[in-house]
Image 1 (cartoon, protein in one colour):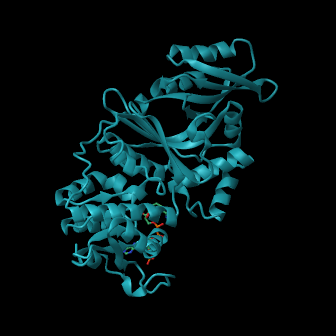
Image 2 (spheres, helix red, strand yellow):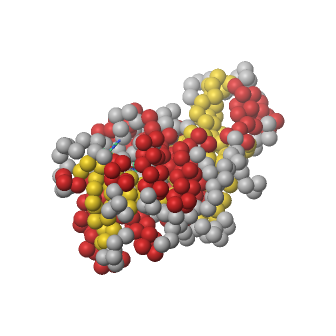
Image 3 (cartoon, protein in one colour):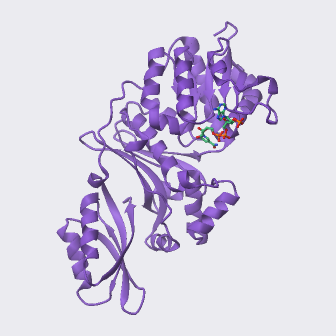
Length: 429
Ligand SMILES: NC(=O)c1ccc[n+]([C@@H]2O[C@H](COP(=O)([O-])OP(=O)(O)OC[C@H]3O[C@@H](n4cnc5c(N)ncnc54)[C@H](OP(=O)(O)O)[C@@H]3O)[C@@H](O)[C@H]2O)c1
């Protein structure tokens, strides 16, 4: 770090996030200097195509040589906004080895290799800051790593994917079908042409792994997360949920059991209207954290977008730069592999819709199947779908997943049962 306290930044990538980051630094550098005593200066920006037009970006800073940026001795901090996994991991590891802290927005990489990267940063005595990798526009990771580090967190539940929240909000508020809501999200640029990563829950799954790792201080990886997407949610499911005083949200849920094992799941979830997460609409994100001392805290804000994401990365950059000047860094400690609760052993309340003949004794048979598997019914509603078939909608009390699945198997074998339909997990009041 040179004596004038100018901190030189090497930015990897100049797309949606990288270009917003560079713009924000040029707009805010005077104010940042006034308030922190350091001057942030973008010294090099690596891209795939240096000839592409990039409004407001100094083309003299562009290079296609990312390794050259990382190894340049005049660069103090690396800001990674290029995405990707193996190549990016190599660049980040080289940056640590060269004594440079890294700021990243890369959830995919952090969910796959976060524990190794934290270890490498720690061994090099530098920071790895990742605020923008989860719910990018809200300062939640910082809270987990700093304010809440001494808190006994029992559960965190997040709406951490803006695309799916937008789709489900459209379905809830305008009665749109899943396909129409997805098409509208694509038209507005909230969803990719191939929406699988979002609607299939994989993007939220990466974020769940990162949240679990930092909330519980153990290594949880993308592959440890049970993932279900929103593709099967119908307008009828939404209408049923609304009638029962609930909304359907795609939640990332991470929990630590009394034995210390960790459950990490992403799935569409029914939430009571009164739950704070139920009012998080459109493409907004929120994370709701429960712990012994704090009771509950909720973080709310923009989950993506160039400017909100860049704003968090600027904050991280100031932090890591000040730490580097002070000769300190923030560690996440040793991350042992977490014991993961298999999905069959996880506990939740459930919603299920069942079509059955509208005859005396059928309800008793179905209720009996629930009871004989130890699954207790919290509420039941009936509507007549056709003259002789009734649709029964159940919400259970909390039950072990495998007991609930065995119940459904037994129910589906009853002669009077015509169809076992949608199953959703339910968060109780
Ligand atoms: N977009 C968001 O709202 C958001 C929010 C939170 C986190 N993130 C994360 O931020 C990262 C970047 O997202 P983005 O939306 O900004 O992506 P993007 O618009 O596609 O930008 C990627 C940038 O990286 C450059 N790049 C890609 N591969 C490269 C390589 N091998 N060598 C050099 N440069 C390379 C591209 O160069 P060219 O311009 O020459 O193609 C481009 O400038 C991802 O990890 C993403 O998950 C994004």
